[in-house]
Length: 258
Image (cartoon, rainbow, N blue to C red):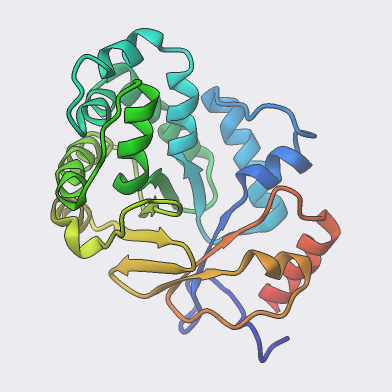
């Protein structure tokens, strides 16, 4: 196995930083399929339990999942998102909502205060969130490359408002996007990340783009015990499927560390 996958030791020279995306796995194993607790103190405890179990080098907070949770309780905001039909209006309205922003800042602040490792914020990429918010608002708005570039301006403005929280990495999840994405097209996002010295990464299927550094995604099949090619890079993203068997996960996590 040592020839297949390198050891991961976070900050050790020559080894990638390991970020584990395990929200679904944690829900299955720690919550027995129950709802994710989003109250800040409860979510911090949940992530702390996951961290103690899996020992990642960074604490991933799925901000996209949290915002989706908040939207289910905000029908008046969804109505406001539907006032205009132009592409991007629903996303811009959502990101401009002060209650959404304040709730995100509060969650991140509580998690950061108790986390044993720096924070990674995972958000749906513009190519995912722009059409998703339009559909939620009941708007039939097709997005093209220009719309995605404009959406990156909304993202950059929103992330500036989160800058009071200690953030290590902003991870955009572009899996499932209908339009091809590249960090090179998201100048405003790159600018705000560079200004605040955040790493910026974009998940695109099996590929991960990153500025700075080189990132890679560990195949989910690894957690089933399957031999996989070693991803090369300074940042490794590893998602554990919700249905993965705990005994397999713990064994594979030990093999990563070894």
